[in-house]
Image (cartoon, rainbow, N blue to C red; front, top):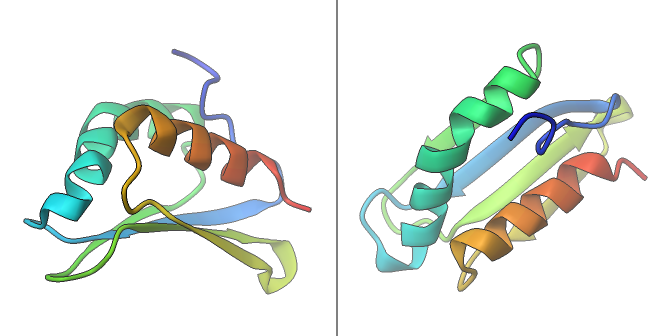
Length: 94
């Protein structure tokens, strides 16, 4: 499990947005419950923000150096697909 979520050096913040109760956010909630501890352990200095609000579609944002930000929708993805999407997003700062 170690190193699976090692973030790139230029990554300054990761933000997850999702609905607390909506079915469309169920996989995102499951992913975070299962993987947040590993992400935080591998990247203790990088803020990982969890934002939940009613009716919000699941999305992940990665903020890099110089204010550059990338986002990816997590709607309709399985737990495994979310893991692949997040891993790809946080490792690619270009």
